[in-house]
Structure formats: structure tokens, C-alpha cells
Amino acid sequence: MNPFYQTKNYPSFLIRFAVGIIFFSEGIQKFLFPETLGSGRFEQLGFARPVFWANLTGTIEIICSDFILVGLFTRVAAIPLLIIMVLAFVKTKYPELRDKGFWIMAHDYRTDFAMTILLIYLLIFGGGQHSLDKQLMESKNYQKK
Image (cartoon, rainbow, N blue to C red; front, side, top):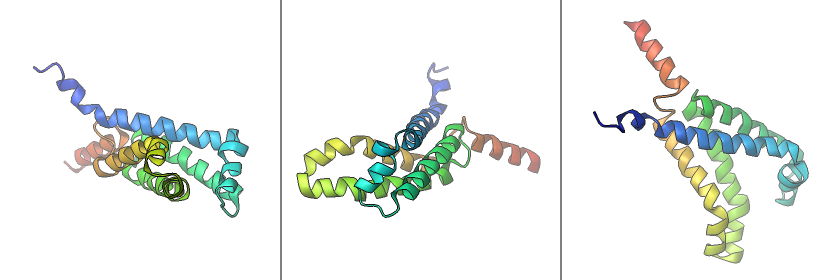
């Protein structure tokens, strides 16, 4: 038997872990450091009602990252986070691309780009073998038999 056979089921788990931990951390920091990462940052970006938008974004990041970490409603939880990533690009990286050029933007966008690609992966492939989504599907199929 191939010694790596057992590990082939873990890529989605590792992706969920990375996405979940990063978004959870970012969501918490919006509340811990509001002047630099929360409402202050949203105000700097020109958002009307920055406290509302920072708190909403932080709450969405915390809740959706929790779902992604355990693999429950993984595809659904990826959608709001993808929307956040698109809006972050539009509000922060596109102006930088326009004003400073591709290479400066590419450097600053690298983490956002990676997170966006990982979210797209989760949207397409779901939570994987080691997720509550998979366990729920298996229990539904078992109950049908």
C-alpha cells in the first residue's frame, strides 16, 4: 500500500485550517485594535459608517472562519469571505495598482491573492473528507438505506 494513501484526504483540511485561522485572527483583530485594523482603517479607506462596517466585517470573518475550521457549511461560509476579499481588492489594491504600479500592488496583494484562491478552492470542492459537511452527508446517506 502506498504510504501516502492516508494523506490524500488532508489537503482540504489543511486549506480549511489556514483559511480559518487567518480569517479568525483578522476578525478578532478588528475588535482588539479598532484604530489601526478596525473602524480606523475603514475610515481611512473612506467608508461611510466605518464602525458599522468594521464590526460587520469582523463578525462575518469570525463566524465564517469558525464554520470553515470545522468544515460545516464550508461552501456557504466561503461566499461572504470571498465578497470581503473582492471588496478589499477594490478598496485597497486596485487604487494601489493605479497609483503605484503592478509590482508594488503584486507585493502587497500576495496574501490576499492566496486567501482568495484558497476560498475559491473551498467554494468548489467543499470541506473535504475530514469535515462536518462530510459526516452529515454520510449520516444522511446512512439514514436513507
